[in-house]
Length: 204
Image (cartoon, rainbow, N blue to C red; front, side):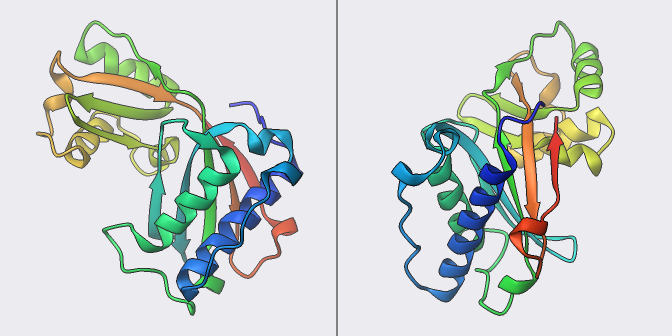
């Protein structure tokens, strides 16, 4: 995915995410954000995921694929949720904050993936390695493109995604399943590093 945010805009989002995580861990009020003083791109609607990790181990990840609010506001809300409401982990503590790596993932609008057979689905996913949304009725789940770094086989990728959606591992082969894909622009704040020294990358 071609970068849509400038380096300054990325740094601002990382700062907002960090302050949201820090405030949440300390139980203090999150600093108010003045959208009027932010760049236009950060005031535009956007969907994001915020991922927290320590020494490479996941510590929290919350996000949305649906565009509902200003990009800056969405990052703040996802960061706060990742620090306190990921059901897989206890809330982040103040002592952990300096050791956290914070990753912000800015999503494109999901697009329906059309395929005529399970095999064609596997082939298309292997070639694109984009973010994937799997839906069946009210049940749905998504994996960011970064998951391909850990799960290189598309069948295993889909089986794990089915499990995440509380479906049978083979449910991805059903004609009732809907698949959407999206791309991600991701960037990081590394622990104990100043924001201006963060390393950025684009995924998807």
